[in-house]
Image 1 (cartoon, rainbow, N blue to C red):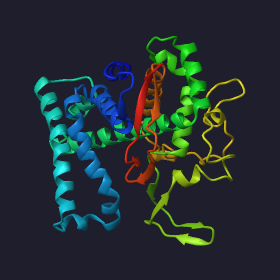
Image 2: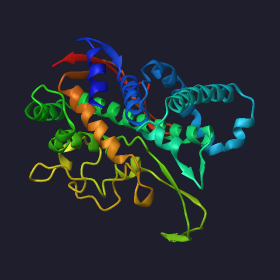
Image 3: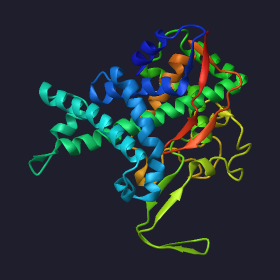
Image 4: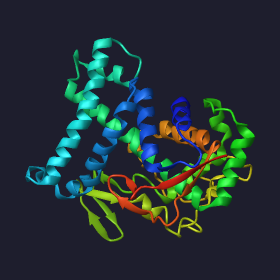
Length: 330
């Protein structure tokens, strides 16, 4: 994770202007390719990024209207199918390479080798599993980092508070796995970004039993939706709910604690809750913390003046029209 981030940082120059959401997407795509699948996906980043924009941008509408909408021959349908085929080809190439090279000690190698009753998965099954991991493993973290950069640019005092920790703990060197536990402020910035701009802004669950809620009977089998975006900004649970205050996540001793803000159980669920809580949560925490620590000790990023950033609730919560920022070397 850190090595990929350093490579990205080395490509930046003082005064560069870039779309931070695109930059973080390309970086996390590189990281997920190397850490989970042992593949160098940097050459595919631009093409995959465009395909993801197409697929994710219209997926919310397709989920609402149902799969039948994909049978209607429209330009949007054709673009979505072409983008999906682009993603499939990248994943299939990774599968073909792993099968050709033999046993590999990564997630993709484990999926290819997995068997049930003596039968392994087909390429289509493996591809579906890999696609889930690619999308969930890079898009959500990219959005978390993108919103974090925007919030830090908008709150100079909080940015200096973060930089003070990075200068003290790292002193200019690259962070390591062992530093993770000693970066509570960095983790607090990530947590507060997840609170205000949760990438998974709404989550669905299918009920296994009838439930009565506030006088309403919700039947077994119904799909219910819960929104972290709404709950995380509810002043009943969060003092100064719309303020960016990463300090709320630290204890009196200065340690990071998810319970430090004092919110009720379940009032913060950026990674879901219960048995279906995100399987990649630990991976995401580690990645976001180390990437932000690596870059923020080297760079400050300021929003290009006159640009208005809005939220687009697609499958993930995305910035529209991106986050144009100017880099300044620290």
